[in-house]
Length: 333
Image 1: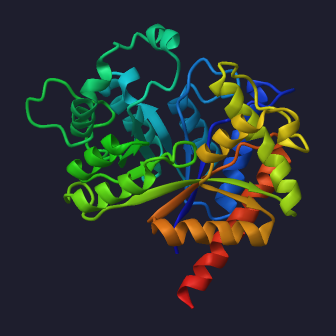
Image 2: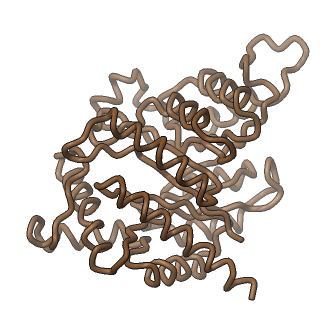
């Protein structure tokens, strides 16, 4: 059975607050654990009033403490924003508190705008050091050598599983070169998905992992009917358009027809960006997920659903879990 996981951005819906969003994250994580989801990942974003997961490592610890068995991690930490030693200490501490349950996905982008990037004290050229920073971070998770002057405490010897995240060929090449698992941001930037998978699998050199391990990200907008699912999707469509036009905000309420609030050209662009999605009632969700799994043959899928109403979001992940279980039974028949 292909493991299926959750990517949660801790969305702050219109009419809600960051406190409610964080409470909803814990509720969804417990829900996901009961439904058989394998991992629960959160992502680092800054200066975005619609996303409450800026202090990602803090939230990972909070979610891990509120659950029992599900793996919890970052999808991801934007490494150019941080010193590798500090990331190693944070995730080494998490791995010490919750042994065998912590993952660390690493991204190269800042996860914010230029002004906020400067507020984070991030050097403008620091992304050029991303491969070196990844290797430095990996070394901190290894057992400390005799006489080693700089150690991650806790961290040394924890062997926290590290994933490379990406939306271009750069991450695919780096993950292949270092022998690390690779997750592609196909849920919002699928343009280079096919090429990245091909490069990663063709160029992979055994390292931390002996064989390529590829994770595919898929949006889910699931409901009891196709029509209601399409309505739920309009929240993400509006949010994406708002972000692209420089007007980010809280996750908008859904509308009956996206063309009532956005021009066709903008909707067409968003549809292209969100094309790796499963949208509809239970049958349609199962068909869409099976289609993407069949096409890309991932080793794991990670599902994300930016849905305004929390109860509707919980239900969407229920439908998706059932679909993944049905797909597993079909593949073993």
